[in-house]
Image 1 (cartoon, one colour):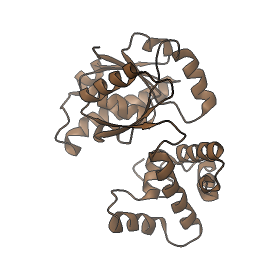
Image 2 (spheres, helix red, strand yellow):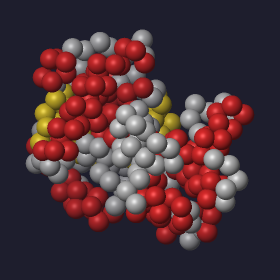
Image 3 (spheres, helix red, strand yellow):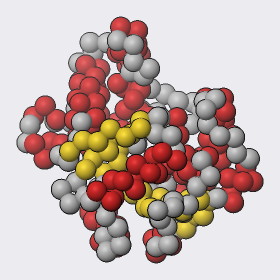
Length: 260
């Protein structure tokens, strides 16, 4: 099938990254979220990403601000994705919220899990989670979309956390415990992972990029799903979330971000 219009439900950090990737590759995006304020913020983020894309990747297409704007539709109405060839859901990790979205979407779409990494338009690989009822056609259509975006898919089976979250969130959570226990500063914890293990970002920097609220909710889901104490959310992490220190998006998390 021809993929020319893709709906993006949820225009937060990941959603804005998805829209950026679509627009850069000549695909029209219909972005849906709850308010005009959220959508305007997402639009600004998308246009900023497009403006600086060439600085971060020589392989990404060059797109003008005007052309990008023409490929982007912002709406608060979920029904506006009905005419799209494909829909990507990025709603916050809260089942009560997701449930309402899927109740509206499920009559028209087959579901396949996609775990996109941030920043989406700069990541060449995506973790794909095949659900119990996911059809071969849905997977083939997704692979077709990824081909247009020059992305590789690694397909795994469906269990809570899949591969990446089950492992990465243990890293981030234990790093928070190490910080809470005053073993080292946040800077030193991240430095060890970057300089000793060759990671581009340390676990606390990664948590800040994802959003501490998102990390906390994901840990809670893993704990509830497996009833394994290794997924018990670090009290310091939960304390920061309740204080509104959510990472990069709020300007402060485990680290401080003056530019936010």
